[in-house]
Amino acid sequence: MDESARQALRALPAVEELLNHAAAASLLAAYPRTQVVEAVRAALEGARREILKDSTAGSALGDPGTLLAAAASLLADWQTPGLRPLLNLTGVVIHTNLGRSPLAEQAVDEVVKVARSYSNLEYDLGLGARGHRETHLEALLTRLTGAEAAFAVNNNAAAVLLLLMALAPGREVLVSRGQLVEIGGSFRLPDIMRAGGVRLVEVGTTNRTRIGDYESAITPDTAMILRVHTSNYRIMGFTEEADLGEMVELGRRRGVIVADDLGSGALNELDAYRGEPTVAASLRAGADVVCFSGDKLLGGPQAGILVGSKAVIGRLRKHPVARALRLDKMTLAALEATLRIYLDPERARREIPVLRSLSRTPADTAPLAAALLAAIDRRAPGGFITEVEETSARAGGGSMPLTEVPSHAVRIRFPEAPAASASATPTIVAFENALRHAPIPLIARVSQDSLHLDVLALDERDIEVVAESVAWAFGQVQSA
Image 1 (cartoon, rainbow, N blue to C red):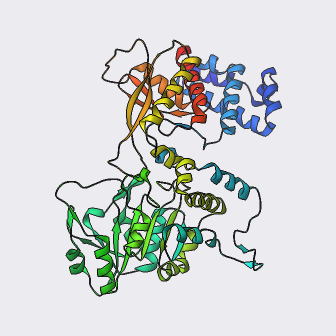
Image 2: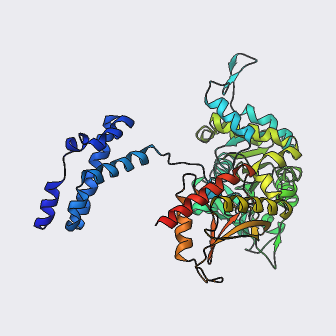
Image 3: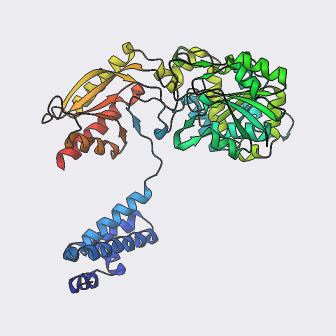
């Protein structure tokens, strides 16, 4: 450390000196004194680190106003929630990084009611005695799917893990080589099978697996045939896949459980699912148990739902690990409310945000994009070039990987950018960054010289909010 750094460090004001400064009065009025002290100490520590990096900056870093401004910024950051709502204009409806499926209004209302009060979570109001939390969902799920029984855990990975641990511990599970999926976060089916204590037996080839491959692989130690829906990819070309009905017939003849992991959670026949296999269809084919996600195509909260025969679901419910995977009261409230909406399929299309978005046509998205463009131009007139363009959006969330949903977007471009730039311009990069830091963050898509605000997942009520975030970000870029 040189002498200038030593002098700069000695010149830094003491904590008490800063607390007695006139500029600290507003902080002490807004926050508890202990928090202000902590923030001031953190600001001083930050100044010390900077001085050690560059001793010539010492005088500026030691200014009381600068230090108190840094403390104020820290106090504001500490009060800002880490998990925040934002606006999704990426063109990906079920965006895993953005929380997947937003809830229907009724589901949100039910969560609030249950969260702020006691509830009959595990209390039978009719008997006046202890009840079971899973009873709140079972009747709805069996009615909607035709299953004999149902159970829910905290996500579909947990549902698969419970299947393996409860139904095939220490034994063989047959899976087609073409279905050994990996989903987000490096979750791989072979890994979870090892964790579940079962022995994976790969059947067939990557592109072709016939029913005979399953039959020849069955041994006295085989406990389960597991079909896995490849919800986030497709194998195309010279392919063949055993029919679920054939697998069920084989399983019954050889005394082996047949489980179907549908993953993406298309609950029943709706146009929005665009050919995805449904839960009801798997049960009609005779699968002993079917599992799927609650927060993908179903449009509810994160959950792993299991439906099937009473015998199989009973074994899952009684397994010790089931308690570790169970749903909390708020998730139960949201899931139950979502399922009730499904009792009326037309209402589900209107009120469940994911279904509403995926059901939209270009005739719906074009006027929505035009309304958004008009709102943006009112708030930031002449600041940039805007236009409505046709786009192709996606379901996302590891669902319907080949499906492109026609949509519209507002394209934003700055005047200095050439019309056909090969890469994002510095201004567009700065603008996109400002949007992410807006009071209500906005996540959009950057392509070449433009920023695109896809409206497929936009709630009409948020048009003005989007325009406000765009205007705020534009102001940040202009003042930089």
